[in-house]
Image 1 (tube, helix red, strand yellow):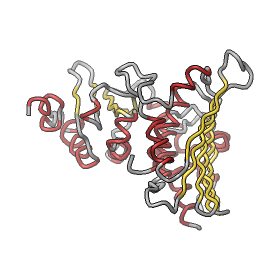
Image 2: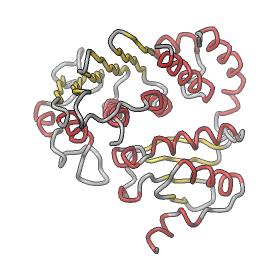
Image 3: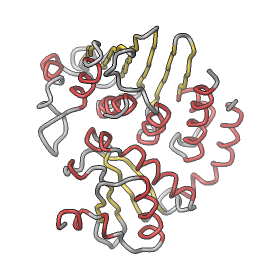
Image 4: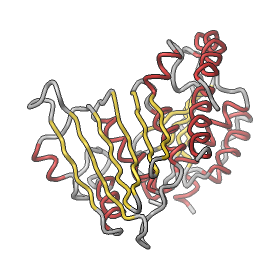
Length: 182
Length: 124
């Protein structure tokens, strides 16, 4: 992947597939350490499935037998000296508190660090693709925060869907303004 | 700064439109957005279609949506166009620039852009 924001888009689609209704995406930069966390309240994975997702020959897709999402994220993290951890609680064992958290750490001063890239486009794409799911986004750059919570927008919008073109444009502008205000 | 009041104004403007949009869509443009598509550059292709369709005022009859892996990963970004009564058209190795041409010639003009299609790519 050319940008980490594309890994974020790709990994978050797993949460969508897991029937999550709320997905938290956070990027927290403290000095040269970047921590990416994607947390969902989806169906979760059983321990035996969790063991296999880091293997490229595991996938949920039905069109072919190779799944590269998590392995590509691991590559991006590990080549900077960071890593990926996944914690998951499957709905059968945790009916009231299930979901998955993917955490990836990166050393941004490493020569092989992939730039974060266009997170605004990633958030727009996710919201357009899943207008009924709520996304809580936070990007903290050494204290300067960019935030978006679709639950707040939904309160204002009422029945108007989040994927209306004008709304998506507003969301993009809202995020870009926060990024340029820093 | 963007404000929630501005969003409320968008809501009020949109309310009438929402009714119009329901069930009137004739054409579906579907962009493959699995790992393979995303890695190959599908995100800007999707954005180009969404922007182009809305800017051309075609949103009431054309929907743009995302799907998973279509199964021909080496040809990503892949875009499928579905129109009632017509055979599905599969465009391969798409870019934002090619998207603009597909909107102009195929969606607006009714003429498939043969040079971008899967059929042309496999026979080349």
